[in-house]
Length: 252
Image 1 (spheres, helix red, strand yellow):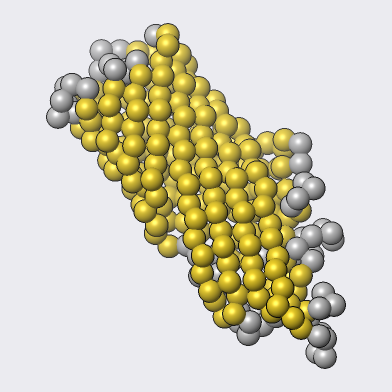
Image 2 (image 1 turned 180 degrees about the vertical axis):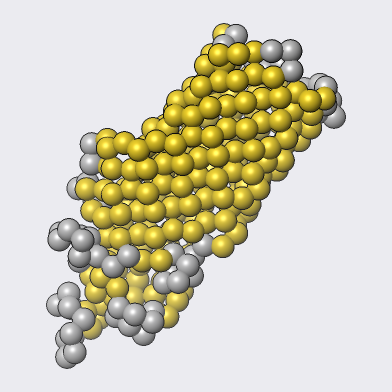
């Protein structure tokens, strides 16, 4: 009913949206920057996706997944932005470089295992590591007031966003060649200098044309909303990742 060990890889059609506020040295001084409106980021991108699961004991399972995204865009600003102690002026051509690494580590305890179905309680950690670099015309004195001197400048924000989650998992083998997979979780925690709320959901079907090989079609949704007060980054980051995944799986 459940796999001992499996490796899956494929494509994640990720529809990304989000916002970022980088305050710099003064709390709440930054402008909430929209990735789609201000940077031209977002939309659907096709990303490589990796998943590994291991069930060393009958009721205990561990799972790891990972994906990476990077993009760069140019956009003409239709408003001024305060970003990490820099004032990016209205009308500037703003160049952005954004990279993100997303990791997930999950433990499941399979409380009930039947002939066709299984139910588990789960706990884990989602972690997002991002880096955003902006280049554009900035105010030399940090103010957007009329008459201030302007120059080309650079601004950067980067940090790691770890957040635990708890949830449930369900598997149902409705045919020898097809299995339903669903997971859901959420959590709110203040860990060190990161106060975050996390939601995650997955629903899909695994098709087994052969005993050890499967094609997985599934939908995944993840959201994190984090207030951060670290040495490298002060502000808020809200990221949403959603979309379909098509994976090739090999199981032992």
